[in-house]
Length: 220
Image (cartoon, rainbow, N blue to C red; front, top):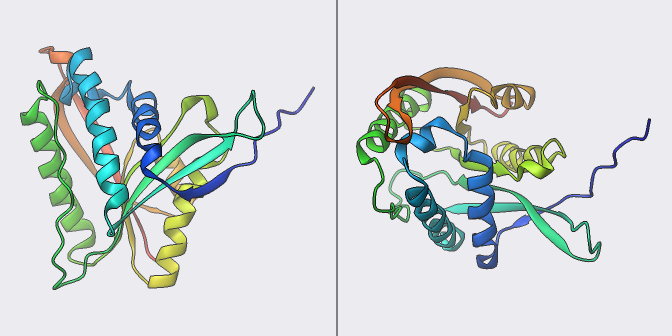
């Protein structure tokens, strides 16, 4: 049986020209996510979310306290050209006395702000309990084009953070979907609390419990 050859991947800093592709990958990777459908309950709102993601990516790429990374692979039709297949946003440690405010999100009209704010509040409380006031690198977002899943792009993006952690002595922090949890365990992260919230998806009234798992990494 023939063995599928994986493309040669390349990790680099994102440029402003990558922002539309980052937004496209984000929606492809997280489009089915229940929390996304609870916070952004209609197709029109989700279309607006893609624009919001693109604008936030532009701001983050320009932010000196944030590193936005992309992974590229050769295009199938032109091996001399490359396509962005994955991205990650790493927020840098903010130390006491630093005057820093992250560029804000501009949410699309129709966003379920009650659900969004409830989740953000729970996540912030869990982060404080998990890591306290320790300055850390935070993996805010990571996503891979589903077409290129299991090619190793996610590992490259996470390894960047691990290298920063080992060089600086700063820990890493992230919140993972339940489905992605084994990936982080395999890469040396330690599972912590589970964040949970009762949500209704797509503007419906039937509630379900949505969960994510906190992971931390401390350099040896």
